[in-house]
Length: 152
Image (cartoon, rainbow, N blue to C red; front, side):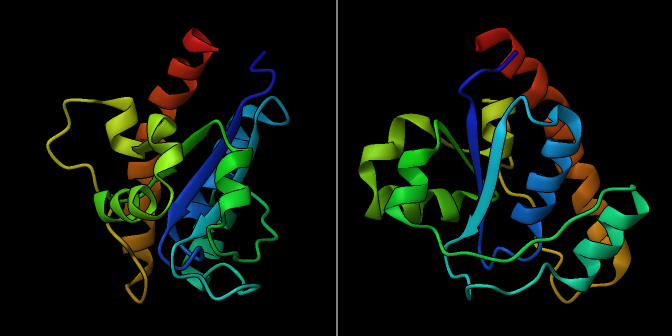
């Protein structure tokens, strides 16, 4: 269906938003799309945050995540890089300008006219903050999967 599609989600530490987006997208598309996540300031091999694990569990999604840092190899592996904030996007553009043509914030990619391209970081917040982040990501992924079907 989406043969060859490779999506990389990026956030700060790769323990909350990007692994959540990775797991949520994978649950929607199965093996049709290759999905990975990374962080611009990730401490390698950290598990997903407790809040992320709890919300994914509530949704019936199993995860076995270990964080990784954004690398040139990961960015070149992907054909679509979706960041959680404009500052993540800016950081990647600064250090890896060669990926600019397929680098977007998640919200910007699904809605180019968005006034707020950022998905809030729930780290350290109550479980409700993680649920809200999951809801926001899911809304974007609903549009993303439709858009990918049309374009690829």
